[in-house]
Length: 197
Image (cartoon, rainbow, N blue to C red; front, side, top):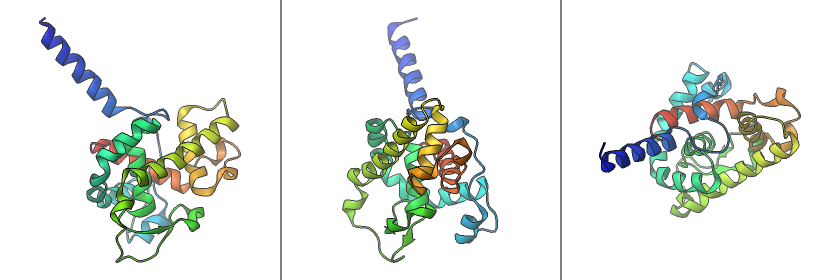
């Protein structure tokens, strides 16, 4: 086999493994999740809930999130976070960054859209905006790691997502890893992972 073909083969393997499974907090493709609650489905006008609702909402937000895809890759590498998870969080919180969200109402993991006709300024669609969201999530994950050192990376991700949404005191045991925000974000993240994020 020629050295050129060998090099091309190694590059292809490296590229596919990076895009299919990277990040320090579990493998999105193998995580099971029930998806969005029926409350979330109804809130968005869907007559169904679960993974199907999460995937539909992610599909709606995907064109908006494509603008951030290169940024999500840069930020993902910086924080060792899968860009698909970043996309899932942005989709859940602000419909892909297309609306201004009042994060004072973080308790339900949705926020309040202040004005549906108002698009955020360009500076909000920057690397620093995506980086800020990701840094907050990774800090919550690290808090969970400190409090529960024997958990798996998947549990850290779930705990971090629940703490991100409901505050760090919400997670008291592995029984608290099934919050709606986490379930919906993970289902959306799986959708985004399967669509190039």
